[in-house]
Length: 291
Image (cartoon, rainbow, N blue to C red; front, side):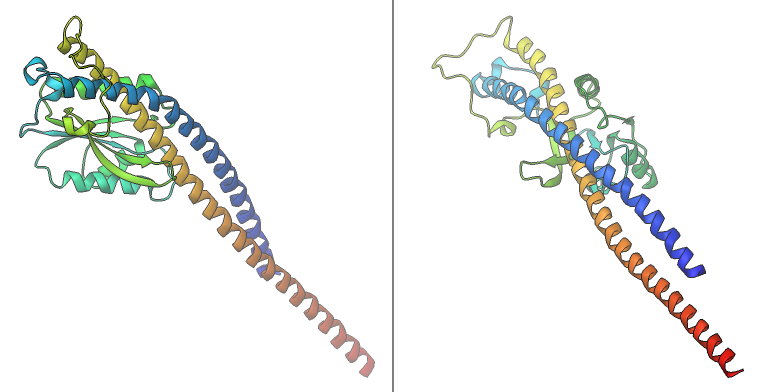
């Protein structure tokens, strides 16, 4: 009976765990769909900004646009923004990002690390890397204001010449649902970054920018970087919840298998106990008859 009681307690615990993983699967599915919707809402605006920037840097003469945001990088320090989650139970999502970031940092003599997500920050600290900046609860509640705040930090570091280039390491969520950790440069803005965009201008003459092309460009770039960061947040949130959804689905399926196995063991133990009781009664009856 002791073994049967232990099996029943274990079965009860697994059933409770299955309820939790099932609920987390449904919650992750809902959050993933919401993040994908926000990606679609922002993508048209981001595409328009990229088209405008491409139109400016592709059609104007080199000597007309002298801007800090298009300067060729020097040999200074680079900034890396690593975006992870604030919660676990999402498979290899966080470790893939940290490993990708660590791979990039290995090639740098010096760098500035901006860690977004408490899980990633803790993993970096375990590797002996202390982030220079850190944010928490970004992917849990992504917002344009958070994207703007982080974009301002990046621009400030770039403007004060503390960094030459800025890179973002995150999980890209594509239309097929594939999750791929990538490292992309966001500053400076070079012509080759916009080769996939067709110029907006379809006129034979160059457009006139008021008050000046440099001032217009100064206003566009922060908006572009904010929109880009928000897009990255939404893609990261979709990738995180997709990873958690798959992890919880696998955990639920494993729990179902364990429940089936334990149920079979409990039935076998119960049948064995009944058989033993029958044998004991039969043996006692035979003894009494012999007497």
